[in-house]
Image 1: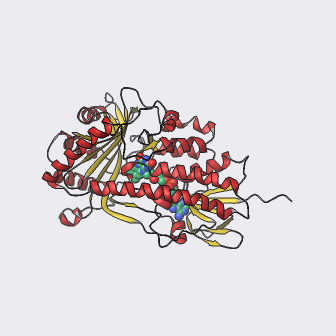
Image 2: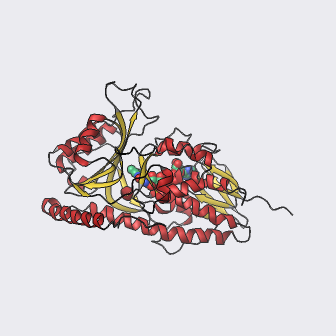
Length: 458
Ligand SMILES: Cc1cc2nc3c(=O)[nH]c(=O)nc-3n(C[C@H](O)[C@H](O)[C@H](O)COP(=O)(O)OP(=O)(O)OC[C@H]3O[C@@H](n4cnc5c(N)ncnc54)[C@H](O)[C@@H]3O)c2cc1C
């Protein structure tokens, strides 16, 4: 008798859920599933997805393994090949003046295939997150506007429940629904989100060439730059040296680049400086808040001026979509830096319901690995499901979860310890010790080609 084709439901059409969808379809000849994917957003343009992310070696490898060759052909739209001699795709850390503290040795790659073949996970390509999602959405029948609110297990499968009152039945349910995952909250209510006590504000801007030239002159041509201050405050700037279309800009003689900027500070500063009020519903107020801290916490210097000028570029109101280079726009707001260590509880029981990506192990953005790990999960889970049968589905889920939990717990805790160390308020004198220590470390890791920041992969 012919066996029924099992149904897999994916909740969440983010980078992890979409990659997993493609992997199951790609493996169809080996194991066929009826795959359905549901997303709470109303459509692909509902929410701005635009910030830059670094796709590293194992993320690139898993991505290429999961998607079809025809979709892979589009990857350069999201991750244009690094521009030789102009862009340095790697991480660099500087002090508040832009003076280099740490620049781990990083192999420069020519394209996504070369990054996939390196063994150093700090080799990355800075990628447009929105375009990567658009590419992954191609030919995927996402069911939009379907917010999952929970599930009910039966002896034969799982009913997935939606806010609109509908429900769907499946054999396996995969929660790829991000850090606030309702699937995780039901499966593992005791697994808590860890709050770092760090506030971060993220924005995308169109930065003029003259401003980025000043940054590069000071801080080098790294596409992923961080600076640390005295009081646990950090700035991040990610950019590509690829001009965006100019016709919409006021100054037609200037070239503009897309940049993601992030400002982070210890949340307790908000209590100490409560004379400065901020309204999170109002972008202008949030930007003023960031500039207030930058001026208060950072000494006057060229690097401080550059950071302030970048924050001045954030649109204060919803911009005219014809003038603004991005398809949609999210108001900037304060966010908490958080993560989830999946091994902080020891009660993971493998059932028909599992988790993937941020839903299982949200990671701080400091090491730039959250999306890479979500994509890697997609590959590992799809491989484990190749052995699926109605009798042994639990062992497939167990195989995936054993690997996923160990790998991601290590990464989450590594990223957490770096973020918390950077957020310590060392003060002026303390910063002299910290900065010199980092310079010494930088010398050794470059001299001996060591790298303690990265996960070693084969
Ligand atoms: C500033 C910043 C920089 C970053 N930089 C990097 C980087 O350089 N490299 C890197 O690897 N990672 C980076 N990350 C992390 C990365 O963006 C995330 O780890 C990654 O997007 C997680 O993918 P995901 O698919 O698990 O979750 P998400 O991308 O959050 O997708 C979850 C999806 O589920 C949907 N959803 C949620 N709830 C429901 C529901 N109830 N019903 C239906 N659908 C639902 C959401 O709408 C969303 O579409 C960065 C993050 C930030 C904030």
